[in-house]
Length: 114
Length: 118
Image (cartoon, rainbow over all chains, first blue to last red; front, side, top):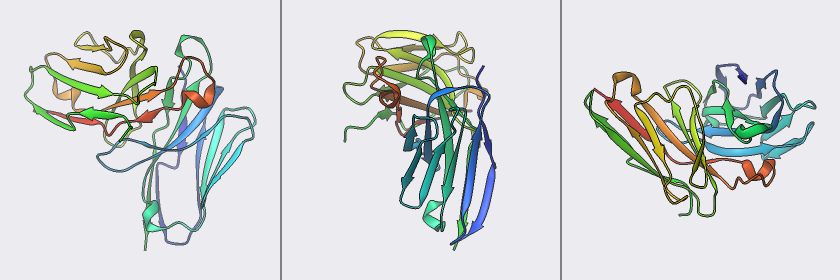
């Protein structure tokens, strides 16, 4: 059974601060996806990282995939109230009949205060 | 809109009743997944289809749950004899799939169906 540990579970910060969310596993993933979810809605894809060591930037968000494809991080620079939400990491199973199936972390609830 | 759609968005039912949810994936997406999410948790995998074939079912999916994708397009998830513990958000996602590579396995989610069992 693949597990993905996401931390921290809660994050409450002031506008303008930086933050980092981590996802760690002992399993290798074929890819790792980050989603943002608003209350009562489905997760919305932010990014997919595939290659070990890959870094992707999306405006103030920077995503990194670990060299061994077991862990990932999301860094937000100068957080804004509009960044508030639930952030989810999800690893895709690397092989076998379950190829592509997602294992989700527990999520990080981010609150950015103006 | 060509995203994943789910109906209904909300369902309130009494314990013991049957409910059915529908998911319409992004057209040309071969894979369709069902997940369940409870408050404050990440989604948990329930089952998935490659075209019309159901390839895997989670142990979370009791005998009261059944899913179909008869023509390889839309899918339905039925819960029989609902219990209060079935109350959750049921999410559907689709991907290009067919082993086209890890980026093509990216899953796109629908808005979910929130079920409340009284």
